[in-house]
Image (tube, rainbow, N blue to C red; front, side):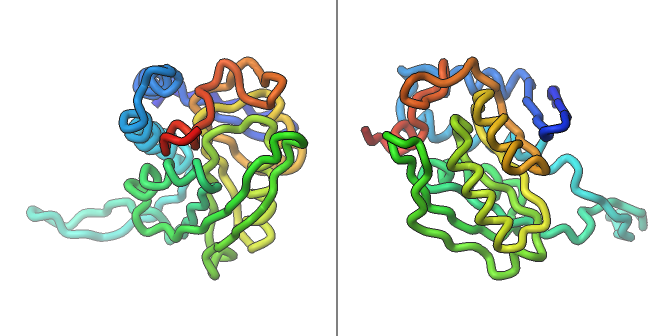
Length: 218
């Protein structure tokens, strides 16, 4: 799958440029895409991004029997994964990850953004009790200012996650910079890095409010 990987002193960023990813993203951005199709596209796009986010999971050799003979095959090496969507919009991405990593445990991080201060307000957290034995994938569709994603990752780290990867649909440079200032070890996987933020802290050109478009609210 095509990708652009940038590794700097501030952190690692992967922008997935595969044609299918960019094709689906174009429909997500389109204001005329209805809720039912938007929801389906978020699921499909997350699946493709998860493929890249899990690229470096270690493998080990196992002996199996095919219908014809015994052979040495490869399976993921005892790696345990936790998926942690940031409510509410991150829930729209959850099934896309679980369709590929069905054994993952799921945690939930409830946050909303104060529209005046642009700071995150936490209202609910429920994480797997064995998170200290797992690598975490945090799901947050829009990496705008980076405040909410950084706060969510802080909570996951405090619960003991061995490593954290952030999967988002669209990111903006200020959010990437802020997140890597707070969490330089976190790998960001996204479908696009947009131009910047408007006066309300929304990504431009972006795709609007992901939560509203997922659930048909305003």
